[in-house]
Image (cartoon, rainbow, N blue to C red; front, side, top):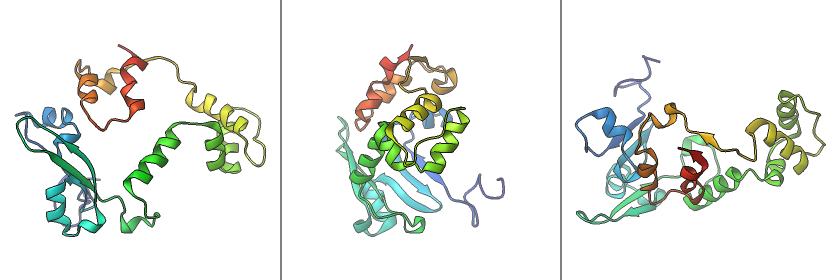
Length: 196
């Protein structure tokens, strides 16, 4: 990977994140950054997310970007973020940020009927085989999906202790996470979900 990553140079992947300079230690500056502090996210050289003003400058065409959030600060004027939700090189269907968010939210609900409607018979068979469970019905049913979700993901979730790898033994981990105004409701429940 050293010939594709690690520097800004011709022929490299050009995956870059630019955050506000708020801390003298670059590592601490990065890991304490919240959404408001992200100035720009560039993937394979294409600016996809960042401050609305910067996105307008680097993309030039605001027809392909959407404002996703606005942060109000006491010391500064409102700071808006924009996103380019559709990348031409992916071949994925064109969707707005709201449509994408709704689809992800629905998928993250792990509703057995929804999972059954999205997972093929072959994939469900493989998943159930990994769990050493009987084959699914054809077509896949919500009951099949429920068996797979229980085995593969431990659903319904049980209370878990947060790993030091996840929080980096950072006592401010959850308080910093909760400062994100756009944090979905289900993620706001994380502090209660984990035993601290």
